[in-house]
Length: 232
Length: 343
Image 1 (cartoon, rainbow over the protein chains, first blue to last red):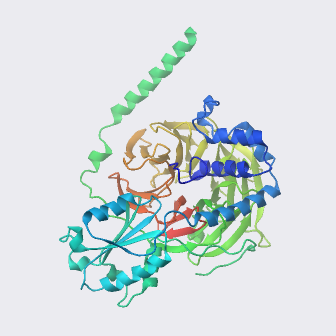
Image 2 (tube, one colour):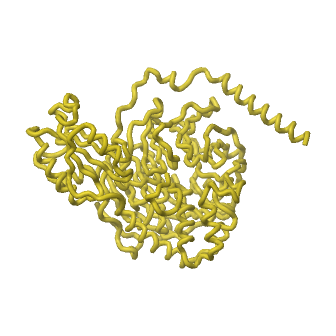
Image 3 (cartoon, rainbow over the protein chains, first blue to last red):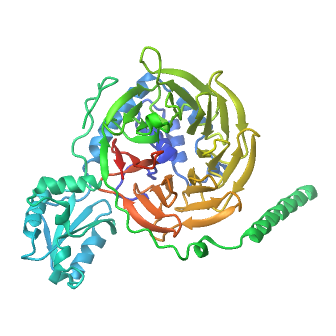
């Protein structure tokens, strides 16, 4: 769960505990918080702390509740600004790539899946020269690789996989999507999902539909009024 | 000290009796009962809509239930807003500014007339969506808990149940803004609650590693389910109301049968080492969608206890999930500020 790469607070949890964590982090980074309180917050964030033995089942301390009761409007605004900053930071992380990598063997294939950074999405195209759709898909990926630099795009010919029988022509081209060693998406006969002529934007839209691509644009300006409408 | 020892022995004795009684009624295991069932094939869900508008992490979401609002849902975000969405058009029906940005939970009333939320302010705020002049205003602020509000669920327009970090759950009278019943018994922060399909009972999951079934009118704890080795973060009823599903920091989900009063099965995988923070069952109860601390949602075949899919992606840091009341779609809320509708 915690890792040296995420140089922020110790545990990254979602749910109410995640929110409590976010609040502690916010208070720690806030200049207006006195150092003694910051020390308390750091202690509470560390589950291994021996100073507070009986609090195993309780997630927040009395002093922390008191701190919250003292918060005001200014805090709300400070928090909102901090959120925007965090959001921008989080959207670009991890190793970067710029082109499609050719894999020449089953070993190379396995290595790429296993050695990739746990936050990096790995998209592998299995193709064969002469099979319909493979060349077009290859050029689409070349295009996407320059745009989505946090994704590792690869391609491999069926002959190189050593599992040629598994990938008969009628399931090619196939796209496999991995992250942290896990198979997230498995799209055989990719062209059945696309029209006769397709472009990089079609592949992009397809992957986005399955939640596999990052949303590039997000939310409107901070002063969005109530009742604003967005039609898709 | 002699008396303490006696009492301790008595408690242990009672626990043994309960274990024995449970063993006696256990005539088969779930695995044996479903031996003939085929595994559900690989499940790959597609994003149908993306709801854009929040400016920060989504902490919670809840679907509407009434036929008029089965396509509506409400979400709570760190940006201090509650947004009610029309998931078909992706329009924002209401954008409600909150007094606190630390909101852990939100709920949609079954009638569709109100929404509620709460968090580190220890209060449950009720908002009337159908006010006369069209403006959404705070209707009530239910304050009595001495700890954070981890979850809230409406029974109807005049009653709501809340669970809190103060280890209790409370049934409120919304009209008067007062506590009708306080459900005490948990030894750790209550993290989540769910109401039974017939609205007569509710279950709560807590940081004392147990789940409790409460009778709302009798105001008693009917059953306690243990077995988890860490905090229970998420809880839900199996669609027919006869079983309970829990998700815990011990990286597993468990299914407990109410009538047999015991655990039927554990959903675990040696590859999963992080806690479960949210869960939702499909309408038929065949699939369980569970959200984990590594930001992925694993889809389990509830009968065969095997993973049949993952809802994951590049930056799809899922923090909450919900299945719509008509079972047609599921919604995931993410730390990247978007909500996605999948099926």
